[in-house]
Image (cartoon, rainbow, N blue to C red; front, side, top):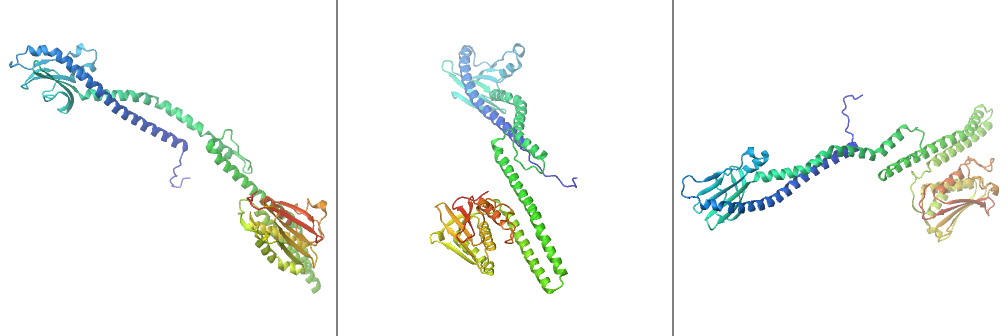
Length: 473
C-alpha cells in the first residue's frame, strides 16, 4: 500500500550502463560528425581552390580571343553567356551547381565586357591577382583573379561557398549515416552484453531468495566475475559468522538447560528443607547449603556467558605485558585463597618480567582466573598454589599453574578439558567448564595446552602461547 508516499528512485545498473553507453555513443557520433565536417571543409577548400584556379586559366585561354574581337565602346556590353539549360543536364544537382559558378571580365577602365548568366551585378574583386572572398547580397563567393597583359583585361572566376558547405555536409553525413544505421543493432547487442555481464548478480539474488533461512552454508556461483568475488566472499563470511553466533547461542542454551537442571533442583530441595525445618540448627544448615547451591549456579552462569563471548569478531587483540597481568589476577584471587588458608606464589625471572605478547587481555584474564580458581577448588585447606612465567623460546612463553590437590590420573589428561567433565565429582563446586573454557582461549591464541604431575603433588597445567602471532579462530 502506497499511503501517498512517493517511492524513492532505485538505481538500476543495467539501465545506468545502457543510458551511459548510449549517451557516450551519441556524443561520440556528434563529435565525429563535427570533426568530419571541419576536416571535409578544409580538404574541400583546398581542392576547390585548386580547381577554381585551373578553371580560371582555361577560361582565360578560351575567352582571350573573344575579348580581342569585342568593340569595348559598344553600348550593348556586357556580353552575357548563359550556361547549358536544365533540360540538357542529367540531374537537377548539376544545374544547381552551374548557377553557383560565375565569371566576370573587366577592362582596365573597369568596364564589364563579358559576364556569365549566373554572376551577380556587383564586381567579384578589385584589381588584385589570386584568391579573395567577397559577400554579395548575403552570399559568400570565393574568387580567383587573373590579368591578361596582351588584351588588358581582368578575369574574375567565382564559386559560391554554398557548394563547398553542402559538399562538406554531404561528406560528413555520409560518414555519420553508417553509424546511425548500426545504432539500433548496437543497442540490442549492448543490452544483451549487459544482461549477460549482470547475470551473476541475478543468479546470486535468486540463490539468496530461494535459500532456506536456516541454511547458512557457503554460496557458490557457476561463474563468479572478478568484481563480484569480494561481495560473495563478504557474504559467505557473514553467513559463517552468523552460523558461529547461532551455534554459540544454541550451545549456551543447551549447556544452561543441561547444567542448571540439577543445581536448581538441589536449591529447591534446600529451600523446602529450610521452610520445613523444625529447629534453628536444621534451618541454618539448609540455608548454608542453599547459599552454596546459589553460588555454584552463579559461577556456572558466569562461565557459560564467558564461553559464549569467545569469538574473534568481538575480542580485540593488543600488545600487552604478561607479568603485570599475572600480578593483577593473583591480587584479585587473594581473598578466596585466604579463605581456605592457602598460599599462592608467583614465580618469574627478571628477564621474564619484561615479556611482551600479542593477545586478548580480557581472555587471558579469564584463563588465569579459571586456572587459579580451579587450583584453589581442588587444593585442600592450607594447600599451596604456584603460578610460573617462563620464556621458553624467542617466539613463545609458558604459563604453568600448579596445585597441591589430589591431581589427575595421566590416562585422563585428554578428557579433563572436555565440556562438563569432572575428574573428582565429589570435590569442588565447578561444573566442568573451567578447563574447557581455558582450552578455547588457548586455541584462540593459537597456543598449546598440556597437563602433567605437579611437584606440589597435584595437577600442573601448562599453557604455551606465541608472542607475536595474531590471535584468531
